[in-house]
Image (cartoon, rainbow, N blue to C red):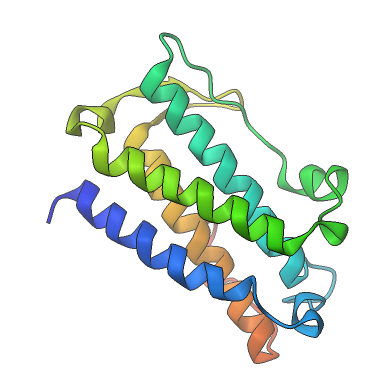
Length: 162
C-alpha cells in the first residue's frame, strides 16, 4: 500500500470514528476532558473548523501559483467563534463535507502532489502529504480526548504534540 493510500484509509477511518461523537448526548457535550480544558462540544467544533482550514490549505497547494498557508490560533478561534454556543449539528455537516473534500483531493490528485509545498504564515514549509498526515494525527489526538470524556476519565497527554 502506498503512503498516500494509507493516509486515505486513515482519513476515512477517522471520519467514521469522529462523526459518532457529534451525536453524543447534551450532558457529554458539556463535559471537559480535564479541568479548565475544552468540552466535547468545543473539541468537535474545533475539529470541524480545523478540517475546513486543512481543506483550504490543500486546495491552495493544488491550485495556486504561489500559495500561502495561513496559520490559526485554536484558542482564539474557540473564543472568537464562540465554540460553546455553536450548533454541533452544523459543525458535524461542515466536518464531514471538509473531510470528504480532503479525501477526494487525496484520491484524485496525482502522486506528484505529495511533494508540492507552500510556505506557512507561522513558519516553515508544508507539503501536500504533510497536511494529509497532520489531518490524521490531529483527529487521533482529539479523538483520545473525546473518548476520555465519554468514559468519564481525565485525559492525560501520552506524547507531545499531535
